[in-house]
Amino acid sequence: GPDYVRAIAPYQAGKPISEVAREFGLDEASIVKLASNENPFGIPESAKAAMAAAAAELGRYPDANGFELKAALAKRYDVPADWITLGNGSNDILEIAAHAFVQKGQAVVYAQYSFAVYALATQGVGARGIVVPARNYGHDLDAMAAAIDADTRLVYIANPNNPTGTFISAPEIEAFLAKVPASVVVVLDEAYNEYLEQKDQFESTQWVRKYPNLIVSRTFSKAYGLAGLRVGFAIAQPAVTDLMNRIRQPFNVNSLAQAAAIAALNDKEFLRKGAENNRAGYRQLTAAFDELKLEYVPSYGNFVLVKVGDDDGAGARVNLALLKQGVIVRPVGAYGLPQWLRISIGLPEENARFVEALEKALG
Ligand code: PMP
Image 1 (tube, rainbow, N blue to C red):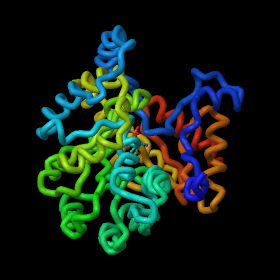
Image 2: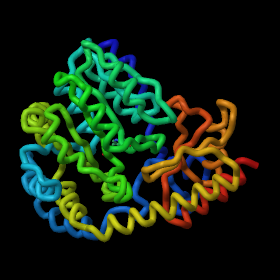
Image 3: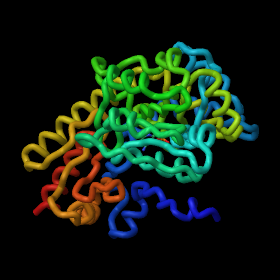
């Protein structure tokens, strides 16, 4: 294979519950998983019902163009349907963008401590990643604008960012977009957008009208509770969308996923309940961190990054102690944060189990 493929370090996903149960001799039902920023309420009932109804047609291929889902998204976000690209999760969108706009030898700009898939998508097309040092664990947009060179074709920005939870306000992003050359495509990855409080929300999906080089990426994996189904989408002007759809696999979003996503999109109550639980869970976790005198990065997502020790073995050590107690969280050593763990916000009782296990783990 190409050397740029051999150079890729594999993505490290959260350990599945079944694997932890086997490895540590635990009962699956007793395990708490707060590792993959999943929705603690699981899949909405409305989406389950839509899937059951769609199951009868599984002998047929899915709608390759996702007509109904795109129509629902177009209505929700007030853009024409041909401004939308569907993805097999938003990871697919991130990768499609790299394939559509970047070739071998060109460059992609992204931030230190930002989402791991940016590097994977970049390396997958044989491009050079320009990793811009973070500021306060988040994106340094001035430095990112300055890092764009003649080879750069794409920039990835995560807002809120994973794994740190940092957030960039609308004026800061607009100032950045004003500086980016028209030949560079900007992917604004808003996987955690639905968790933002009203005061922080802005109409990024309308910004694509003003910025022909902007792609806004969203997902059904987090607030909508459909991580296992793999549905994401992008909004961009038709010239950009057209190229993305040429490279997209024709049946990348399956029939059950399309049906479930339409139902979830219209399930306002599920979103409201999830956002409320997230805010309460954030207060619960951060109150415990304050009490334990642990540093954490203020988070706008459904997870919190917490520093569990001062030595570079701390993250792995505390993670192992948690696993032994049946609590799965995410070590972030691969992100260059070996003293930290990322905790997804769960249900109140799950958060409490984690805090109890953390106290024991820290001795
Ligand atoms: N972007 C960010 C910032 C994420 O944290 C994630 C999920 N880990 C994704 C994209 C991809 O999620 P999915 O492919 O499930 O939509």
